[in-house]
Length: 167
Ligand SMILES: [Zn+2]
Image (cartoon, protein in one colour):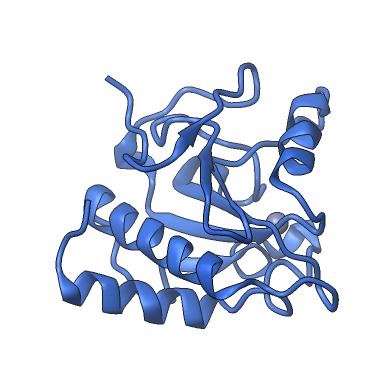
């Protein structure tokens, strides 16, 4: 049995991950798509080719829909310095144009809270990072501060955790 977020829409992505284990996942990395739709982000992953194949575990849309592409055991290719240790979550948002919505923050916080509790990851800013914080060599300086606040996601995730399990 592989591990999927219970409320996610599943859209399995084949050939864009490496085998791994849940025990490897010590960090959660937040990204923004810099595009206006989840479908566009998923298509970018599907069309990426070796040696530049990319992927993420989940995409959170502006309306709060979570689509999961890979089970959390698999290593996704989203932040080069920490791929093998992390879970990657994309958010549909564009710096200066499309800010993360309230529904998206709520969905992301619920997902992060679930991941922290399921994977035994501390729910704090040392373990939930933006792409540029987690893997500065990728030079994605706008991923994700500017359109999505990692501080806000973690603060809301801590509140979800304090309120008790919901899924
Ligand atoms: Zn990124």
